[in-house]
Image (cartoon, rainbow, N blue to C red):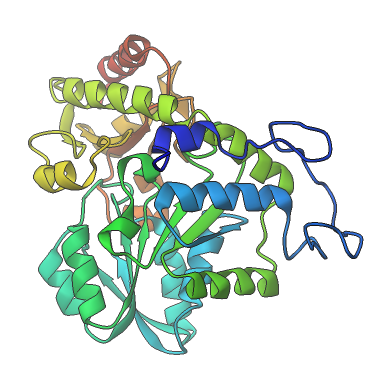
Length: 374
């Protein structure tokens, strides 16, 4: 048979008859020790676990990668990536991206571990100029929470021309809409907490690499530092992955509908969604995100922070909570966080669209917008 398509790979995530009991879903292996001479050559729980290995094999297949290491969180995976560079090395970091890497890079910069260079990754010329002499370029497939889109093929090629390792955080895109390794990236990281797990009940991360030797370095670092995933979380992620394709399709369809309707609401001043024709990187997103534009939408309201907070508190279906990617829809004003307040308007609300009926989602959001006064 030819290689399985991504939807089939996810549907079969971790499934294989257990040799001892014949169970098709993987059994949990809640142990820290193994008897010497066991068939899997397992020795200690900080090094390997059969449930981890099933998840890692699935992610490698989805990303067309040589190896995957699963970590305790998405930030643990990014932290491991940053450890690949020598002391004092220049590292390019998205200036308008997720706050976690920005915070970590700033702290490592202040400690002298790296020399962090922050740049708008949607501006390719700026990326190339800032990335000269950098050992690592950290990019995002779609930035969080402003939803800008870098020119990944151009940035990856330029990064390699500059002698840098290029890593893409593709959490917003998932392997179903974008596979950065196929564009030439050296590694792709995910917060599996989000769409892979899909049910807001685990914290987990991963790094998939194009080169097996690099994968060994990542795995060795994980063992040494102990940033290992929990076995239950890994098992839950495998279960969540099996429905990723059907979940994400529903979420993206609803997100597109909501993004278009928001533009017609008089309370909304601006909508950020790469699937909209008016998005500044729409053509770029259409070329790169071949499976869809994602299920996160951001928008700005009139009335500033006060009205935005009121909108978030006035919904019944949308949960007023952080994070994203779950089956339930969530929203929040991102400038409530200090680091995001530096890069986003005070009234910006980020939506994570779930799998509920889109009409219920819209009715709830529409009434919240209309019932609040600035």
